[in-house]
Length: 511
Image (cartoon, rainbow, N blue to C red; front, side, top):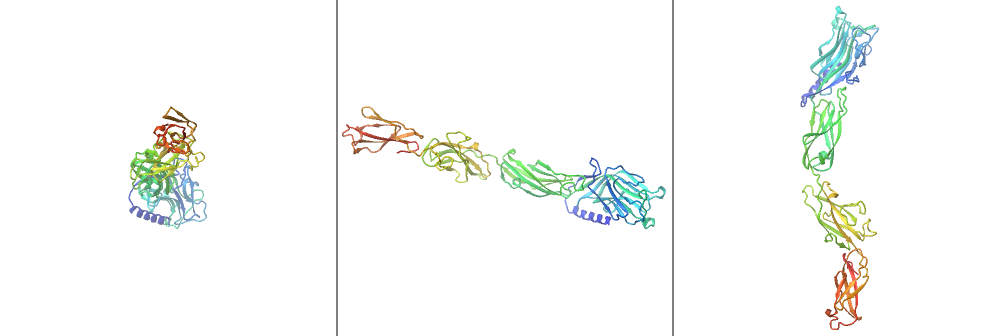
């Protein structure tokens, strides 16, 4: 039964290899072999008649040779002191099977094949049932049996499994059963250590890639991505290549005491800080590597790196006035945007309002940063309704504006600042009014305390209760009053005059 199953496994494996592409890597699997710890995770026991045969595993035990009641390593032997003979075709041993689609190409081992009774056949066979050269021991009556022991190496193999086995085959001796030992085993096989070379000519598979590393086109900042892979011998590494060079590699936990040493499937996450790359196009490739060192590269993807923050806007104005202006209504700030590439245009306006005249954004005295996707060349700031300033809105302000592009590049360092004043209350009446000269007269007004600069004066001159000038205006805090050149008074300029004067501030407030 064992030989039949092995032959079928070999047939299926051969078909799988024939339909694939040769990648021809190898790896070695140790059993009870140095370096420590001496373990066996690759050879499996089999026994078709446990009443008469036994298997045992004692990696690292002292080698047993010659007649003995003991065994060492991975062993199979007849059970001692049986009351009946061992039936024909009883079989026990240990078997190594390569992963599906792979083959065994070599073995280096320390073994012992021993028998001292007719019908017992200790041997090492391939999947097809062929005995490896010099790996059997035939009974010889002249020397009371036979033994093959020590180290041996076999190369040039092409099989899917190996088995070290003890078989009861009495027919060549015209017997129907095999004898068993009383104080010593009549037949015994032992594998004290083995290193099997597996040939893997199957490429690992990249089952999927995902994340901005593999789906991004125009990118910036740090990209992340996942590489998923699978393989019959297991995935040993996942790799990320940038512009054809290995950028990063992640190792998976592999144990080369197992036929398939590495995980059958893997999922590894990678990150790429694109600020380490020059702006412009770059090639991205995923790769997975199996236990035999076969590498599969994924298809090449292209990203275009743009880590350049948009420049600062230029020419900021407030209510169509230059920096330093005063306004008495919500501030509409406009500017000119810089030219940006068509594939990464300006897509966001970021701004923050702060009290005072500032050249850079201060740590305090500011509103929370604001963001808007439209409009892209103006914003409206109303101190009277802004929660940060509504309790005392009349003040000097500096608004900082910086831009963001379509993929998210933005920097406060690239901001344009405009300082202006916001004043809605008119100036108080002049604190004083004086005239000087003998005519024409210079009328001088005293300046009340006021936040916005006082920029103009308004006045009316009256002679008597009914004769008054129209409202006159002029810059600053003084004006010239000459009755001789005022139509209402020039025919009779002499007399007593009353002058009413009030002020206007830079924001245009007057009363």
